[in-house]
Amino acid sequence: MEGKAISKGLILGLVLFQTAIGREVCISELKNPYPDDYLDYALRRTVERAFLQAGERLRCGEGSEKVTVEVLEYKDIPTGLSPFQRVNSYNLFLSFELKTQGKSYKYSVAVPYFLPSGGQGDLPKRSALEDALGIVYNKLIEDLIRR
Image (tube, rainbow, N blue to C red; front, side, top):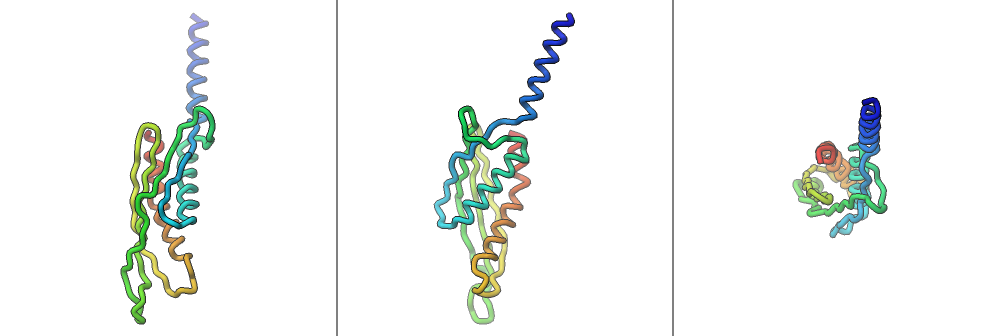
């Protein structure tokens, strides 16, 4: 009787230990048909952070679950003109798909941004991309925990 209780306790402890460690996940591929290196960087960083916060471990090895991230759409839509008849206001639209071994999740978001002058370069667009990924982030974590 005591032996069975001890073995059940050991099995339960082993199961809880495995659950606490989490699964190993490998983001094997990030497919991005758009020529924006910052999109690659920001999207990979956001997805990695979401997996870590969901209790997974990032490791590309034998037995790791392969994950693919694919950018479906990434574009700027002009929405406003300056007094000099130049476009200075945009909506950034981002849509991507996260594929795990068993499921597929799609996310899309649109964020407005303003380009006051050409002297700021890509900074407003990068900030809008960070905002867009921040909006999707909570849903991403929620989906990863539920899977």
